[in-house]
Image (cartoon, rainbow, N blue to C red; front, side, top):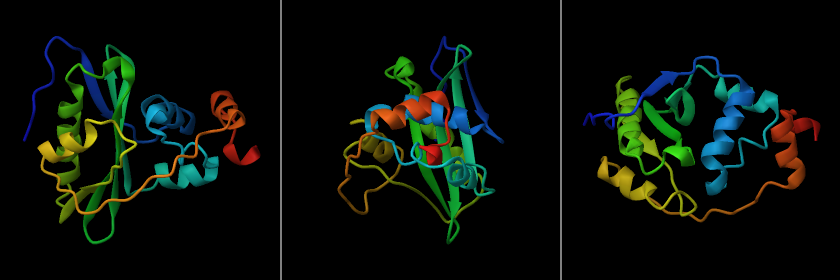
Length: 169
């Protein structure tokens, strides 16, 4: 299903083929802070680089009116499976019609490599609209688990803001 881009908005969705780690962390922080996306923020540069710049990882960045507005990350994993690892919008573009459109673009991109299946994981910490949106676009729940919140400490937040390698802390 191809959904139209919301009208009267200037948006671009571009693959970030060699995304700098500081920019990746910025996206993660801006999109996922409210939803407790902290695992990647806690990684050292070496750990994060291994994931983000792997041949099996594809990251796409949404910009609206020339400013970063969200991103999605796909990973080619075992058994001809593509996982939608991360998907989200920054607060300034939420409720403007981008969520469904961008998820449609993520799914078109995921299926373009002709995998056997495309999967996504979510939990109760995600945006309340996440699960209904995934279901609207064809995903079916297959399991449920509990998420544990381990908020970032002030020192960790400071290291992210300063652009320090998380392993130096």
